[in-house]
Length: 309
Image 1 (cartoon, rainbow, N blue to C red):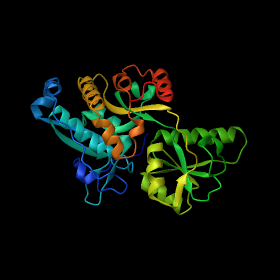
Image 2 (image 1 turned 135 degrees about the vertical axis):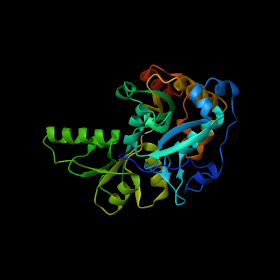
Image 3 (image 1 turned 180 degrees about the vertical axis):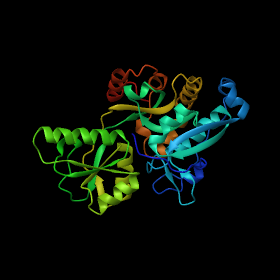
Image 4 (image 1 turned 45 degrees about the vertical axis):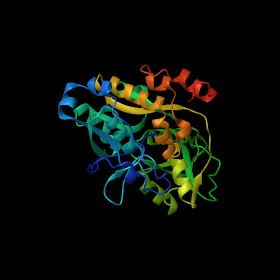
């Protein structure tokens, strides 16, 4: 579940009520109470400021993050930032940006934490620490209703144009498939990169691309909202872990992990995911506690539903 490019202006994190105004999102506010021992465990600098700086992508589209009509950021990434602030007992300074700015922002100290739902990869773990908070399904092609690409996955297509979110793992995977098409001597697969999901979907609906490649969460959301488009193919297997990020070696990481474990155990995190139609992807405690990226055992447990809450 990964996303886009260059930087947008920031805006404050919205309240649950503002987020719930988005179409298709349950109209409820999910909140949490401060846990004093977690507040006390915060790095001294954050305690002294009484504020935590949290970055997230606000160009991803719903359910993850958008700038609303009122100019405020909305979506799961934003609500998650607010929940963590409530549990830690500090004010949240929410900073919306495009995806490519988030990891550099952590490294430069502009953010203490990134609550963007981001695919946890070995390469990213070389430069940031992850707190995994969500199981991930396979990403999906989204096509116009009646498209001859219906029923296909990324690995099935050549000779078409695919829209992707610039700077995302989806762009990397689409380009890898384009190379595979060329290697096999098949028709060229063209990859067009866009800034944000709304631009991708506009290109799809105006037939400038034949399909767009999105995370399953976004695919689910938009295909339900718009009768002109649909998932090309749905597959329920769990294939990845997704999480929040802190700077490599940050003292904040273990505190946020404990905060997320608390929210996961008392059901608050699952309630927030349910607000966006993603409750079935709520992680087990073992996923939240995972510091070694032991993906295969966790994913096997998820697919067997023996470790899924």
